Image 1 (tube, helix red, strand yellow):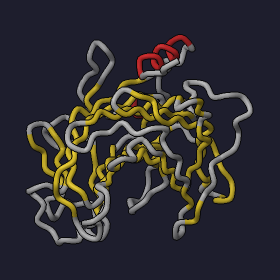
Image 2: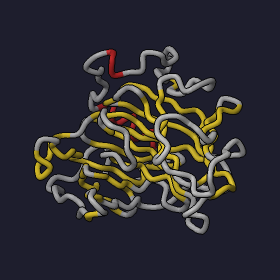
Image 3: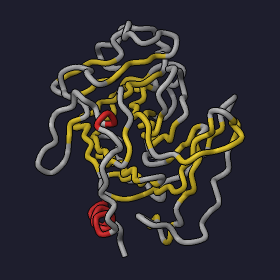
Image 4: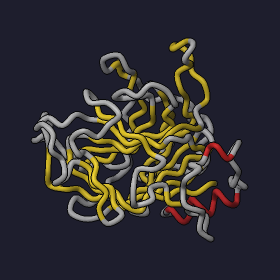
Length: 274
């Protein structure tokens, strides 16, 4: 049986998964009103209202033209960039936290690459379930990897998750198989604990637009690339700030779009409640 995005959403509806958020503060106050189908534009296409900027070594002001807004799109590290060859990494972050949502956006690679990654794969990502607090590179998150040939991988940073059982290339969603309780191994990556949870298949294109989607439901998540579920996570947990040896349920947080040494464009950044 082939499991598609439409199948997943139908199953969520059948399970009664549609819920409301704890308060209206969880959704960006300045976002455009939701359309009849429930989708809301998370980026208004004109300015960064509802978002903040951070670049390692620079701070919260876009000193070097890292981000340009062109024809309703976010253009990162494109022709407007006027900084050093080693472009500091960072992100755009929503000012609000979100939970129980369906996120979707389109991305396309540009040709520019910056030191120290001029020979690496072009790389970016969506970081989700990021807590509020001090801004710094590699915050606690679940990363939805956007990378040439690896889009859809999951890289939890100081968070952790259980990878769904996959049978014949079909990650189980929206429910996992009973008894799958083993967390993926964590690696100490210079002061942060990380997992690398590989997607089951790769469906991104390097030359045109890709549509990526994230369904975040409770402590579970599904990664969808060009209409195909290729990764699913269960039992997501965050380190307890009071005791980093312990974990607590993870169900919400900010959403970040990475700046990571490669030119990339984003458009149609939309979200809807589940």
